[in-house]
Picture 1 (cartoon, rainbow, N blue to C red):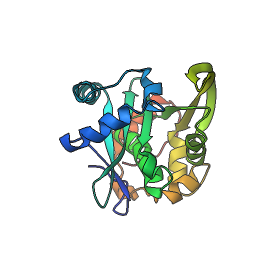
Picture 2: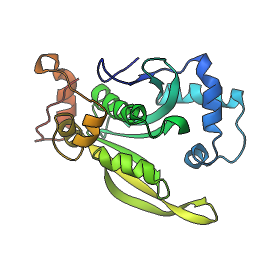
Picture 3: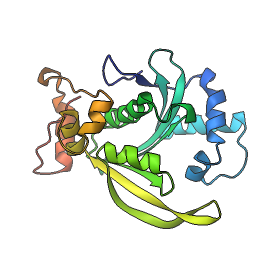
Length: 220
């Protein structure tokens, strides 16, 4: 289980058998999850289990939990390309938790986990133009809009654009220190980084090697 710090209201964890029921519901939410996968058919429990096993082998799949009750409130799915120092991720939060601080912290936990666990210099994610809440959360977190895929998906009788967002390691670390565009997001999620004596030099060196001349101060 992963938490940004001891005060985290949300944690990241592997999925358990008891989570599958909720994951089936979430993955059959045709208003959202189906947009990611392009599916328009009902997913049954065996289908979801097979999908979870595949993602657990080939990507980073984690359940976002309520820190006090361990109740699943969402999940995250990420693909990491260490050779290029990038990762793509997506986050789903249950409708009942979307506007809560735990949802915001769950998002921050995913970003923090990817930057702390892998030698990546940049994260990418996507949102649809009609999802203004996701856009607001991403902007608050220091993400910048890199562009869009126009008329990417059919939505409520029209085609809608998909927006591309990114955040660099430098921006994330500045936000964790209370500076830069990600500071508000970091404060709201109570994100904090360890002190210098907990610094992990080996992974930091791998990150710096991806960007010659960069002055990164990676902290585990």
